[in-house]
Length: 385
Image (cartoon, rainbow, N blue to C red; front, side, top):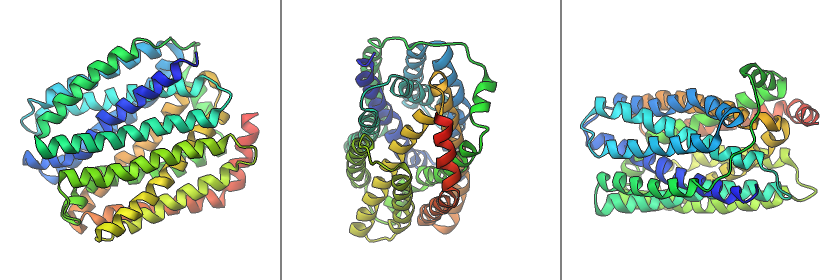
């Protein structure tokens, strides 16, 4: 079964290349269509809402039905989104396509992660580090390639290119084996999350996820308005730090396998870097902002790997996909709230404000996690046994 892990990591790369990178440029596309700020926020939040509502169900499918077939369905939905965007004319034609994007991205994300979480290896940290590397490198590569397509051509070139990539991805996914499934019921997952450590972890991750919403609605516009970057410059600004993020995730995974690795210390370090430098990168001086972005991404890399490690230890193996999906739903609810809140605030106070405010909230989540650290980590360790 271990042969499926590199295939799943390829799917993770492809998902972030096609979906995450495209979403970064969507606010610019919507502005070029003449859409109002509230319409921009609604469309981006619709995709998040679909993922929010569908994440647990996607994981439930992986635990009880067919992960491989669910991945095929996700690829098809993303393909239809990109083909449809070639012909989109306004708000109401884009709206249903964002539903396809939300559902398709979620299926592909959760079901690819099911292979990573459920197939055990001798070096779990290295596995999770490589998976995070694939995830982030897909975003970095996508931001640069799609930014170049936008710079030299137009938005339609992005959507056509994505459709071709997805055809190749589908062929690659056909070589996956099916994961063993078992009968599960929704109340089993609710029970897994009803203990105090998981409730606190959920609150902390919800608060941290607010910064995703801020980035979705404000970052591309911040780079254009505050830093004066064009599409190619924005792609370089975002993609280079994410390449560093990808390698940071890989190296963090290597550290996890060492005997003296301390999950608590590394998680707090990641949260501190993520929150503090998300604030500092709003300073409208390009070299300084760029450097701060790098440190923010290193923090996000550490957090991503630690979340993988923690879930694999706390949740039952037979319900890992559904549990992961439920946690993703909680985080996406944070992103959804962030798109609505910060999309509105960005239009009033400028595009730097949402980024700085969401960074401050990440630091608040660090304070909560630190205050309850003995409850979270001690009882989580007991639950894992």
